[in-house]
Amino acid sequence: MGGPVGDALARGAAEVRLGGEPEAAWHRLASLPGALPLARLLERADTSGLPLATPVGRLAAEARTEWTRAATARARKAAVLISAPVGLCFLPAFIAVGVLPVVIGLAGGVLGGGGR
Image 1 (cartoon, helix red, strand yellow):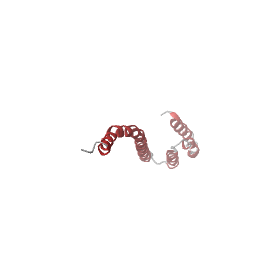
Image 2 (cartoon, helix red, strand yellow):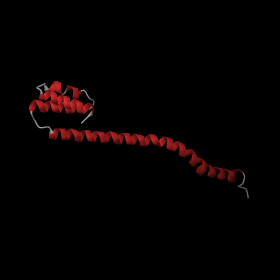
Image 3 (cartoon, helix red, strand yellow):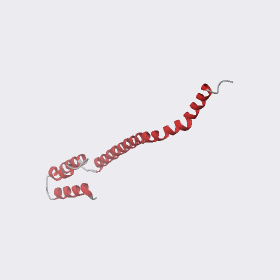
Image 4 (cartoon, rainbow, N blue to C red):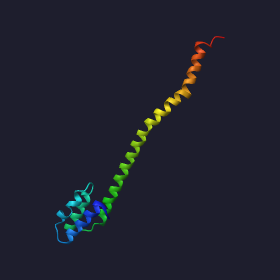
């Protein structure tokens, strides 16, 4: 795994393997945005010796759920924002083609052409 998270994970694991304190070893990972829960989990596992598979799986599921919620919220916001320009384009056309001829026809019948 590359990037800042992969680098922080590799460095933290190397520090713990070399006998470093778990809190100090995972501090760099904890400083990355969104990685604090994972850093706390790794620190707790290094201190207590408990397995990580289940808690990390839960953490990943929560992250996926949060990502899905955020993506859905962004999609809803985009749908609302796109409706204004579409409305501004189609509303004048609807008035010019659909409403205005009816109003002109009614006005012509009422004002001048209605007497037989």
